[in-house]
Image (cartoon, rainbow, N blue to C red; front, side, top):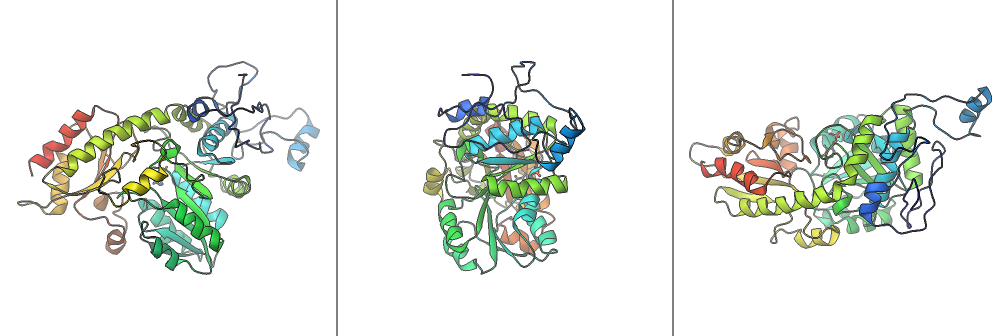
Amino acid sequence: MSQSQVQNKDNIHSLDANWRDDALDLELNYGMQTIAVRAGQHRTDEGEHSEAIFTTSSYVYRSAVDAAGHFDGTKTGNVYSRHTNPSVRTFERRLAALENGERAVATASGMGAILTMCLAYLKAGDHLLAANQLFGSSIGLFNNYMAKFGVEVSYVDCFDNDAWANAVQPNTKVIYCESPSNPLAQICDIGYLSQLCKANDILLVVDNCFATPALQRPLDLGADVVIHSATKYLDGQGRVLGGALVGSDKLMQEAFTVIRSGGISMSPFNAWVFTKGLETLKLRMQAHCSNANQVAEFLVNHPNVSTVHFSGLSDHPSHELTKRQHHMKDGFGAIMGFEVKAKGTHDPKSAAWHVIDSTQMVSITNNLGDAKTTITHPATTTHFRLSAQERAEAGVKDGLIRLSVGLEDVEDIIKDLARGLDSL
Ligand SMILES: *Cc1c(COP(=O)(O)O)cnc(C)c1O
């Protein structure tokens, strides 16, 4: 195989105008792990083996006429890093290949990707129909800002197919969901939603942050756009912020013009971190999921836990659906919610706080998708800004704890959780 690029056979990436086209058109069908390690690399004449970081805000032209050509469209190439940057492009190409999309557009954060989605695909008078189980800031963005710009927003139970169908309106333009969802790890039937969207001329947008392409490829299941908070598993080590949208060339061009005009672009350094993160994504996700399956088993058998929200459990209502939607065997994700029983002097909230405060190793933080196991009390942190009613609709109870199972020895994770649960 030669120098620079791996391309998925089914997915020849059209290079947009600002990319120096040195990709090799390899008519070979590489596996996902090969793509994760090699796709999208932009090798310079220096011959560097590993992906370089291009920390430059602008680019030079050979002459005045060359400069003019970059603006009138007769020349292709980089103009400014708010638009394009080689390091960002490498990440975009690699992620697009892994998600089996034609193109990806990288953004400054996951919320930047969701804002870009709203600005690109919605206008005043449109209806955004969303799952009621979402990352807290997504709900905040939709309710506080999309509503302000005249977009109608409503929510439905994400696992209830009939509820989705009944909530579609003539002006519905986007259906938006996460699967698995935050914080209750609920599963949406993406294939069903895709049919509903196609029949009603609606875009289906899926936040694939919790599953990642290592577990699930929403575009293959019929979604139009995939959203990522790269901040989570794509980095995997909690270092930098970033996000992305993935989909068809046409939809991504609309997103690209938003980030170019709005300045929601990803930093080259962050893009480099994510590019390297993708190389180990599948291996990390296998380990995350294996640990998570064992932690869920421990929790479900603990007398002081009333409910475990995790579709890896065989009696979970979405267990079979998850097995169909996720292509990694035994890969149900590594984020789960569990509800602690009120006991003795503890009400649900103080019982949950007791379990959290009794950990010695696990990090008390609102972040997730990290090599380090993290523990969160959503009602008083990530979902605190929601009204009591919004929290209730999102199923965020006072006794709920969200756990993002990391890559430590699973025995140590379980021991750390048991300390508080045993002493309630
Ligand atoms: C964290 C997260 C986001 C937002 O991403 P940021 O990178 O923090 O802006 C969106 N969706 C989900 C599911 C998330 O977990």
